[in-house]
Length: 574
Image (cartoon, rainbow, N blue to C red):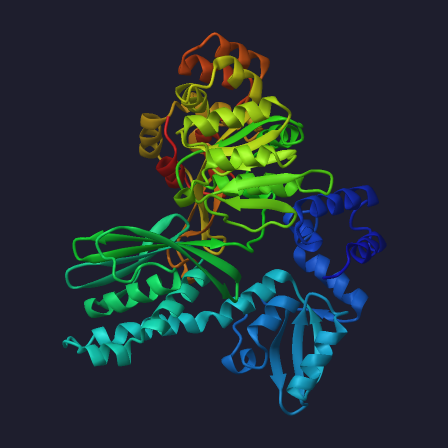
């Protein structure tokens, strides 16, 4: 990638931004561990076209935007996907007459790669500058053949005749089916693969952006072979069909190393398999990218810098709690501190962090692992989940004795976590003195940027919302976050939805973002805990202290065009 100092000189030369602002943006990009150019564009300091055009001119090349360009298979075959992905370079045009290939790269100074392309193709190379997002568009096209393979598996089912076992093996090779399913799931960004047997066939579904969708149907006769393949890869018992089994598979894909948590459950028509996809080499996001609003970001950023205490993330399974904790650990990760974790499972591998995985079969539990970690001279401890009294007590005592403890717990909202801890026999005084922060969260789908459209709420829409929320509370959330400077009514706001297009599969959604409720342990909140106040009293105190509820945060994100009202209604409650 182009070094930020060179970019800084170019920006100053063309008077785009003051030096002080550029230095601040560079520091923030480093802190969040993201590419400076992408960060600069994301902060709306300068348009992508203006930025890349002046940088391209400085390199003596032209800028090309490939975001919406479709590349022919002939051009894709000229370079392997691994090279395109690793070096962020792609061939987008070939002129046979002049024997020249046009390449787009994020670093025109990468002479070694450019020379490799020249030798591999035997053509002269014309270099263009492009953005990482343009390269990602090309990478997605390398994966498009997977969709064709998925469709080809359906063909034998469409002739309506019974298939023999030999025909099944010939038309539907088990290894190819599983490998293609996995590649396609990773390509689609699925978090889970469901393989569900019924009386007549097998239904395969993917969970994408938190919602399950049908992908394909396979003949019933392929069931035993497919389940056996999964059992072999995850080292499970092939001859056990009556009891549930759990295992793990680690594979390498074009998107990086992937761990698969395997769960097999006997059901009426065979064995159901659920594969949870864990991208171990996934990119850790920043707090801003996770979706924290300005007030919540300030509170979280302040508390993760404290040397001791407990920060808890709460919410249902699949609400992004572990991702939030990993983001915090990434920000805290430095040579000056010792960070250790005990997890089930290890979802991302992080350098310089000592990660351990529980194994109940041999007695290695969260509580036992936490005790061992405390003898490892840690500064920061991450506990995958507080699920029993013993773990809760060890974690709270560790927070009291000078350690920063990060963990997850299952409750519906932030205030309920206080009462969940008391049910685990944690004394009120210990909760008040050790818990720094409780973050309740949900994940909502984000609106597809290619088909987003605005609208105003109708009278019927507002009546429906008022059945679930107090409208004055929703309006108060807009005011707290400065989203209603003109003091207009709810029906006058612009809200947004996706119309549906080819890029989002006609769903209107693409990607997810978090909605949050950040409960800060202020002196008033501590006092209420010691007084053993009710949940409603605790909530009132927290809101008076400045807490934005999940519903308020969600409606603000809907007004900002990040998600829809329907998504907020789906995942939150009053």
